[in-house]
Image 1: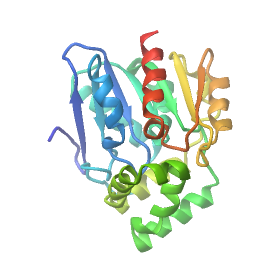
Image 2: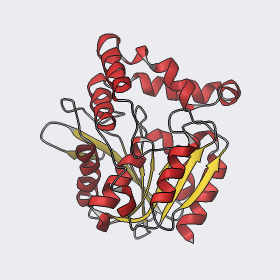
Image 3: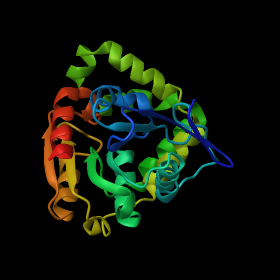
Image 4: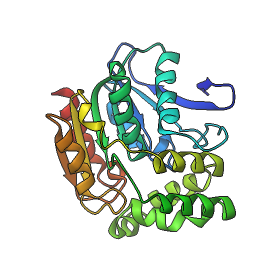
Length: 259
């Protein structure tokens, strides 16, 4: 199992695709593991070297003690690139992954080639909501929040149409460690990139979901307006647009990266 070992935690990752191909890094949502990108990895690994990883306490990565800052979580990506001997990558991140992408494009711009920010926001409050969520999982485990999370992640029609997909993703969510989840919740709680996102120089595309209750289209539109030249695409999905509209998502990302 490929692993980046740190003093108090490990980051699990996979690397697929032809050696020497351009590197594409896929960064996960809070509460998800790298399997959320299976439909993207299957397609993009034909012409890109695709790097996926699990955030601290998610999937097969271990958790350091919470809380974490967004800088902590983003620096895991910088360390991972160094670990595999790469200086930069195309970056596609969803939700927390998009927040990580914005941070890296602002503070470590040399690492980012093209940037895809999906179903994300530069600020995601109110703070009290995150504190309530952290308290709930610490008291009762991941099962305390799984139902409302799944309802935000996917539209009702998708949940009815794809029960096996929903069951698989829900099972992975329930396996996330409380410490890792609480730590990443804190990173989002304390994040405010509203004043720095306009400094991003990377060629950027922003993807939003029309029916996304977690990061509604207005949040994506705000990011796209702030980044000079950014493209904006809206898909008929809830939060995990890369799963709910996988084929269309792959098409728009492929076109953007190849343009």
